[in-house]
Image: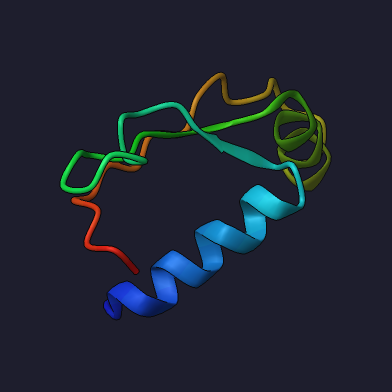
Length: 67
């Protein structure tokens, strides 16, 4: 995915579903976001991977641009 708008929409949807959480300072304009899986997100990831050990964290950082 290259379009920042599409990435922002996808992250917002995943956050709305309780699958990821923004643990960075991205809520402050110009600060970086840091996304990680929630407990529910880890459960879904575990199910989708065929019961392999869950990923402990997913990090995505990007500059917040007010999208």
